[in-house]
Amino acid sequence: MVHMKDQNSHTIKVVLLYLPVHLLAVALTWRDIRHRPANQLRGSKRLWRVVSALNTLGAGAYWLAGRRET
Image (cartoon, rainbow, N blue to C red; front, side):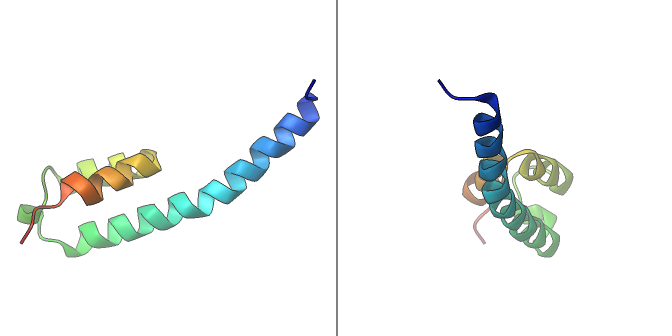
């Protein structure tokens, strides 16, 4: 049986490892959104900022589907 303290420390470790990855993904996404003209996006810049900030999959969605090819 897993003790609650062991489970909490494991959860904290996972979050601390995941958080920098998420923040880097969001920072790179927002940088691209800032420099890309609005007509090269599918949807609004505001929408993509919100979606990418919510979770890392949102940032991935931006890179896969949110940008129009030039």
